[in-house]
Length: 555
Ligand SMILES: [Zn+2]
Image (cartoon, rainbow, N blue to C red; front, top):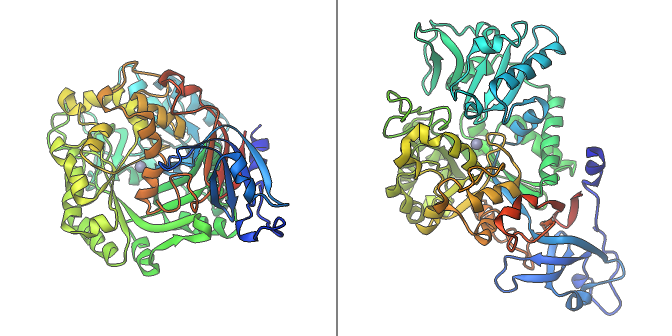
């Protein structure tokens, strides 16, 4: 089934335009005319029935009869089923992480016993001593809802080291063999910005948080280059199938950036990539020296930003809070990057015209990001600095996004997870500060929506749309929605999944609406997302994905 789908990728709709129709200049002859129902998000023509494309860009939008003038002898006419919207974006995704997720155990939604059984099954077919990897577990699905232990994982295997990422990617659950191979013991000190969870006797329990995950991660063998490329391709093809036409990679390492360039040269990037280079390590100097790389290959690849991580994640109690965690009164989270290093990067990036995008989840980390961006002066607005996640925001800080021109990059997909445990973490009053999509908009902020997948329940952009509109998880829970006062209208949510990310990537002239001159990036849906009642939204399907006028997925 999937092979058949893959074969649709890169199916060339129409690239040639060798001759023009009689009496018409080739300048105005379309390569293709798409016919269907279009939601354009262009206020001058919100709805249309035809769209003419030339050279990967939209030539004209209108009614089928009026676009006949653009048809030449070689113009292809393509009927699009359902309703077509501007190409959907994911403003915060982890592409190589997704590729890894596709190749390792997916533990989403499972309880502890199911996870142990899955690892046991994997152990039975894995050579002794080889690593077993997986991700997606969330103790919110365990009963009781507590962090698991190495001992519990030892029941699956002690003949293999096992490392299982928590869904947020900010902590790992390992077995005793992995702890031993990483030499993590009661004598191991917590690294700065990291934590080894310990029992009453001081022994590591098998959960490592944020920078402490490096103890184990650095001894897990890296995938071979071939494997890494296969995984990245698989992730990008999956994005195309899910209806995405662009992903913002929220933290790419050097190998991944090189792979993007390789795939670009081979014309094998099915969707556009806006890659944020990791803002730490030797990649920084290299990337700065190269300067911003904007719109490579007809806008398929852009590298003009850095991603830094100021704190951990809320689920792992790594998010940096001003006041203690409600369920861990001695903890206020972790600072994974200090202000001095952060300000240094902002200065260096600003001098070279790079955007800076800071992961900040706790209210203290969000304020640190805003303070540092404010210190950068007008550059923060010109370079469209972003706070990634901005999950827990003191209401006093909300207006600062608009004031400073800083973009809030949020993930409605987290509504389900937050409904499961955020109140445990931060208590009832701060829970109303979490994922404040509506309040931020009302405070004048520019928003871009993404999923953070695989650090969330799903990377499906239509589910993300559903979550933004209903504040429920993919499975519909909770029925009333997580803080439903933060719901967005369907129209707003669709804009924040298209035009929002386009602005956050300096691409508002090229993407985000179906208007003449922009790239012909289209997502064809089974129905109209703007008129479907909310409870019907989970039935929406992607029929086709079109990037630069080329069909990259067809159902
Ligand atoms: Zn992320």
